Amino acid sequence: MRRIVFILLIVAAGITAGRSVGAAVVSLSPPALTIARGETVSVQVVVDTEGESVNVIQGVVTYPTELVDIVEVRRGSSILTLWPEPPTIDRARGIVRFVGGVPNGRIAHDAEVLTLLVAGQHSGSGLMSVDTTQSAVLLNDGAGTPTPLTGRPVTLTVSSRSYAAPTIMSSTHPDQTRWSPLRDFRVRWTLYPRTDYSFQLSPERAAEPDERPDDTTGEMFYPALTDGIWYFTLKERLAGDSWSEVARYRVMIDATRPRLTHGEIVHDAPSGEWLLVFGADDVPSGIEHLEMKLVRPSSRWYPFVRDAAWQVVENPVRLGRQPFRGAVALRAYDYAGNVVTTSFVSAGLRHDQARFFLLLGCGILVLMFGILALRVRRRSRIL
Image 1 (cartoon, one colour):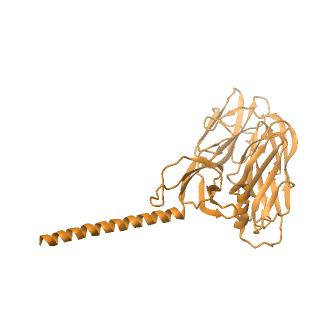
Image 2: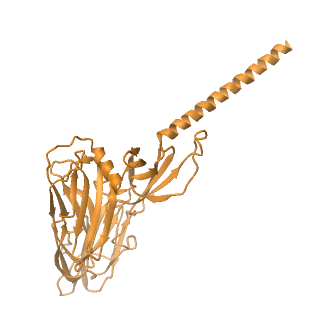
Image 3: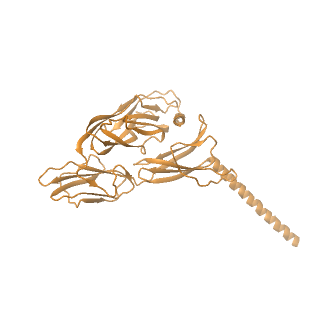
């Protein structure tokens, strides 16, 4: 399957080989990050093709397992739409691997490839890096020429302070690592006597509340938030004491359905297989998984399909070696649970259905003319 997709990506380039080879930079962003033990933050893998059109990116990202853990890898906002090798996490070795591509190529400047959810485990400093010896970026030149590659790491610092105090809770968004389709956010914390509190809600992770105490009952409600990641920050001050460390609570909201576009059934000559290739994207949470329902007509003379079971698939979908005459229903789920459904009908099935209705119409006309002729004949006998 991986070989098939690589061939499709290279052939889809459709550009004569022999262009000058440029360069590409795969970076981890931000370049430096300080997190607390127990805190989970996002690190983006981004690519700058420096003016060159590319259509395949193979990446290996290494991280210090003694400091952090990769909780999850998300690819919904990626510029890559085909995944011969979806991202995998090797926690024992501290490695994230992936191979992805985009048909017809793409010129990118700091475009997102993946988002890594990184959780602080133990205090200390270390590097998360792109292993350029095992990574590659292939040009969209018709031959899949590798371009020189530069990797830029992120410096991770895990602080020794505990992230749990003061304790923040939410009844609407109880899991900080999960996306939610709910736009209304309710947050609360334990309110102590003779204690000041300062808090705020911001889309900026680095934002912190000021040192002016806020009036509060220990609970806040924020309605109709927009899609994206929000941070509720809180600090407290006991009477006669200094302000505490800032506690952060992350809220990830995605109330928008995914998109399924550019569906096309193509024939892969080298493998002899028919494939359904399509575009699937979702902002901001990303595509969690895809489901397909493949339905074929019972015969070419009765080209209508019956219901079938849904099954989880990857893009592209393999339809077999025989010319595909049928319909495909696709369903995409994002990480917040939003879903969208669409369908694709093969040209062969449309042709068979058109022929069926044409023959049916002709049969009805013949029957009507026969009935009319019979009536005329009977009337002439009576006269």
